Every structure is written in structure tokens, then in C-alpha cells.
Amino acid sequence: MENNKKDRYESVSGKGYKSKKPVKKRKRNKPVFSNLKNYIGIAIGIVCIALVAIYVNGTVYYTTHFYKGTHINGIDVSKLTADEVENAIKDYELTITERGKEKSATYIETLAGKDIDMKVVSRESLDNLVKEQNQFVWFTATGTNHEEKQMIEYDSDKLAEFVNNLKGLDSKYADKPTNASISDYNNGYTIVEAKQGNFLNKKKTIECLENTISSLKEKVDLDKEGCYRVPNIASDSEQLTTVLNQLNKYTGTTITYNFGDTQEVVDGSVISGWLVVDGNNVSLSKEKVDEFVDSIRKKYDTIFSNREFKTTYGKTVEVKGGDYGWWLNTAKESEGLMQQIENGESGERKPVYYQEAASHDKKDYGDSYVEINLTSQHLFVYKDGQKVLDTDFVSGNVSTKHGTHTGTYGITYKERYSVLVGETYESTVSYWMPFDEDIGMHDAIWKSQFGSNFYKTDGSHGCINLPYLTAKKIYGYVEKGTPVIVYELPGTESGSVTYQNSSEIAQAAIEAIDAIGTVTKNSGDTIKDARYMYNKINSDAKKYVTNYDKLQAAEKKFKEYSN
Image 1 (cartoon, rainbow, N blue to C red):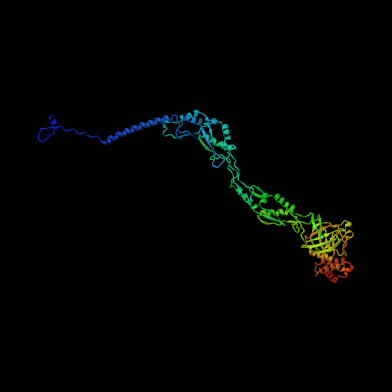
Image 2 (image 1 turned 90 degrees about the vertical axis):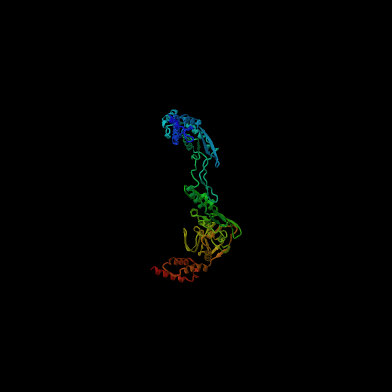
């Protein structure tokens, strides 16, 4: 005991125990690690309590709410109660954006669920879907896509009625689309752009709204959803481009007809009215081309027409009838014109004629013609406007009703040594120039007098009988187509007579014999004509035939060939 007390004291001086002082007891600190453990424990406890609270809260929450990510028939019902889903359907509103008439303009219309009697089909089915969830594993659960037979119902007739009343189906607010097309002709054709318009496709619109409503979406843009009618033919249509190119090829052709000082131009403005489009093909209407060709026939044909003719006597007469004049071959011309247009060949075109005249002027007979006055029994030949010959003649015998016809004709052809055959006669002439079927001008070596009024009782069968040498000259002036104008002019009767003497008549035989030339096995017809001419002339004229021996020699030589 004493020792213990002793221990409690320490000598102050170090020399015995004169003075003693108590010594304080030192405290020992706890280790840091021990304190950290306490903190961690507390924190873990708090976290556990929080987790338990969260879990309990989640368990309670998902007892009445759908899991996150839950969809019913595509409708997102995440974290909604059955009441909230039902109310959302009852209070549903859909904002509809429509295309306006003007570019970038829109119409906004609203569809309320009540407008179409929209409601949940079965509240019980919603409750059952919530109950089917295992709320105790909510923290690991993922949403489920439920497919209910029908969750939402509405009056489809009222939806259709609502759609009918949309601005996009009202012509006051909406324009229907128009197809791309080809313009009317205006110095060519162009493509008229298609117009989209803003008119809804009712069927597509109803389908779009049904899908939107079924998923409870709050907005829909009918333009983006493709609910509008569209043009059937787009501006870049291959068919349109093909047709356009063909149309412009046809109408790019210009064809010019020249009728004297008048022109008829067949260009795009005319051709455009003749074109027929059938699918991808463009063609010319033959009927339209025929109509055009017939119009120029009516306008410019002069065949069979009556003419005002100023005679050499100074008086003007109306010459009726005759087949002289322009006569268009309409069938051939239509064919040729169509071919030229189809080939795209521009330029001047000369029509195809059955028969041509001298001029397209009012005087279509021109200034080279034969003028025959039946009254005076006198004719004139004009060449390039100058009178080069005139002579008396004998025309058709009027007493036997063979009078020569008046009218304007053209020389059909001309021929040497032609045999004229009638009902009661057969005669060979040296110069034959027909103009009115089997009526024509020719030499008449059997006549010695021409002119006066011989035609009344001693005329021909209708032909114009001429002195031999005169017929020869006329033959040299005329060609196929030379106009022959035959008329009567009372008051010009004449007693003038032209005589044909024997030496002139003899020329017919002389020239026929000279025409034989060198005799060959092919000389039969020429020798026969020469013999005919010699035999035909009168005995006095035979005296003037200086080459008769050539005819005899030719006949002998040809006979040798025949043997």
C-alpha cells in the first residue's frame, strides 16, 4: 500500500521524499479504422432503408400503373393507370394539318374523340392487364406489347362524316390535281407542268386517321402521310416526252406551194391541226391532209372552167367548157405531202397534177396558144405573146351535126402519119394534133379550099382541116399541152378563102417518100405511109412529085427483105 503511494510520487529534488506532486494519467486514442467502419455501417443501413422504401413504393406504384414501355395495340401507356388511359381516350384530340391552296400554306383542323363517340371498349380488360403485372419484380420488368382484340371504339360513320367536312375535300378550299399535258401549238409544243393541287384522297385519309386514332397520336400531317390525290401523269413522263418530240418534229416542217404570185404555206400552225396522238404514237390524219389538198384543188384547179378571153378581133368572149387547165391529182398529192411531212423535209413543193396549164395567173392559158374562131373559120397561133401564124380552115360539118365544140383545150399529143378512123372512113394524115378527144387539127390534102362557110355543108367530122404546109408549120409551133381556145364570135363571118394548089398538096407525098430513108426490114410502115400519101393526092399533084422513083425503089428493096 505504501509502496503504491510511493510510486505515485516523484521526488522533486531527486533526494528523498521531502516534497511529492501527483502525476496526471495519459488517455489512449481509438484507431481511425475503427471509426470508418462505423460510418460505412451507418451508410449501408441508410441505403438499405432507402432501397426498401423505393422497392415498397415501386411495388405499390406498379400495383395500379403500367410498366414503363408498355403498349396496348401500339398505344404507349407507360406509367399510366387504367383511369388515366381511359380519360386520355375520352379527352382525346387530334390536330390535323392539311395542305393549303397556296404554296407553303396549311389548314389546321381538330378532331375530338367525343366527335366520333370515342371510348374504351372494356375498362375491365385494362384493369386485368395491370393486375397481370408482377409488381414485386417491377425493378427488373420491361414493358409488354399487348394485343387486345379491340381497346378503342368509335363511330366509323361519324369519322367518315368528319372526313367529308375537311377542307381538303371541299372545292372551296381544295383544288384537284391536274395531269401534266402537252400545250396547244404556239410555235411549237411544250409540256404543261402537272399540278399537285390539295384535294384529299378520301379513302387514304380515313385509313390514315384510323391508324392515328388507334395509336392515340395527337398530331398528324396528311401531306406527309400521302393522303392527297396525285396526278396520273407526271411532268417527267416518258410517254409525254416521246409524244412531245414527235409533235415538234412534225410541226417543225415548213412546206411552201407556189401558185403564181400566191403561196400556200404548210407550217406548224397548219400541221398541228392534222396530228393524231394515240398513246405513244403521233401520226398525220389522212382525212385532214385530204381535206387540205382538196381545198387547194378547189381554189386553184381551172379544168372545165369558163374563161373570159380577149380575141384577136378585140372583143372579149366567154369561152365555156373544155378540159384545159390545172387538174390536181389529189390522191397522189396527199400521199406525197404526207410523206414529206413525215420525213421532216422543209422546202418548196410542186403538186402532183393529172394535167398542168401554162400559168397560175388569171389567164391560165398563158401567152402561147392557138385561137380558133369558128364563126370566121380563121385561126391564129401565138408564141410568147406574138402572133406567128394565121390561116383559114374548115371545121366540123354543122349540117350533119358534126360541128366542132367550143371550149378551152390542150394539145393531147402530136403525131406524124397518124391513121384517123371514123365510122365510115379511114384516113392517114401527116400532122395530127388532137385536143378534144378524137377531134384535132390536121392537114387535109384532099381539100383545095379553106375558110368562108364551107363548114356548113362540106365540113369535117369535127376536126380542124388545114392546108398541108400550114399544118406543118403549126405542128412545129405546138407541143403537148399547148392551149387551144375555140369560140364563136357572131359578126366576124368572113368570105375569105385560102386555096391549096397541087404543088402544095404534092409536098405531102414528097416528104413522106423522103422520110423512108435507108430501107431496112423495119421500113414497112414508113413505105406504106408514103404510098398512101402518093395515092391520096390528086392526079395533078402527082405531077409535082419529083422523088416517086425513090418510093418505087424502096418498095422493091423492102419486098426483097420480105422474101
